[in-house]
Length: 279
Ligand SMILES: *[C@@H]1O[C@H](CO)[C@@H](O)[C@H](O)[C@H]1NC(C)=O
Ligand SMILES: *[C@@H]1O[C@H](CO)[C@@H](O)[C@H](O)[C@H]1NC(C)=O
Ligand SMILES: *[C@@H]1O[C@H](CO)[C@@H](O)[C@H](O)[C@H]1NC(C)=O
Ligand SMILES: CC(=O)N[C@H]1CO[C@H](CO)[C@@H](O)[C@@H]1O
Image (cartoon, rainbow, N blue to C red; front, side):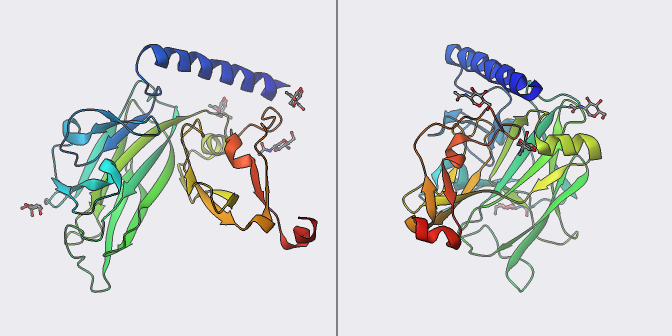
């Protein structure tokens, strides 16, 4: 009962916030989305209704690089390249939701494109550098030169103060210069399995992937905000129709909603081979 009444309260709060947005800005409270290296200071809103800011007022180090690659949208078209001599470069992310004890995820997106800004130093052709969050090692980046795919990492963190520092560093003092295309900060409720674990262990978590199984071939390649209110990025694992069960009907989310998995994810499922005869 307690969890049901809490989720009702949560939905009510979300509705309240939604109403406030429609009066003010379309941007969701606590969302900060930074288009790194963007030369345009003006705010723009993408198709998912996410408002992007240039990092030009947040970061005064490094160089803005515009990729010649086209067709990947404005956010991935620019990056900030930290090719100076400092040992690390940090963004201080903050907004009205960031205060000590509050939970967030931070998403870093790196897209070198097919014509990256420089050749990796290691002859194996991989760019290597480090991501650090509030002085803790987050992840090691390893991306092949010319690999035209987007690399992302989500860290689940608990703010220690009114800002979260996201830093970039070379692996060694003469290693590859780090670069970054986008940074996103999203608030998380303290009732998720992940945030409960963080509260217990006092550590941050690195998310491997949010997976959506059993997506039809014609379905989207990912689902995020506004279908996922928390803006997790659910990668589709597509399946043939014979391995799918899907519905367009709405799902009663009140029974098991502690992780607030989006309805869209639950509307399709992958079924194992033992069920093939039933389809
Ligand atoms: C950093 O890269 C930019 C763009 O390639 C270049 O103009 C600049 O001289 C470089 N700075 C350093 C310190 O190497
Ligand atoms: C975190 O854990 C402490 C100790 O178990 C508990 O008192 C507190 O309510 C928890 N806070 C959150 C946000 O879950
Ligand atoms: C959803 O499930 C809960 C718990 O089983 C139930 O109390 C509620 O009536 C259901 N809501 C709808 C609209 O079916
Ligand atoms: C993921 C999740 O929250 N699972 C819960 C669904 O509901 C059952 C019964 O209340 C719980 O035992 C699960 O932990």
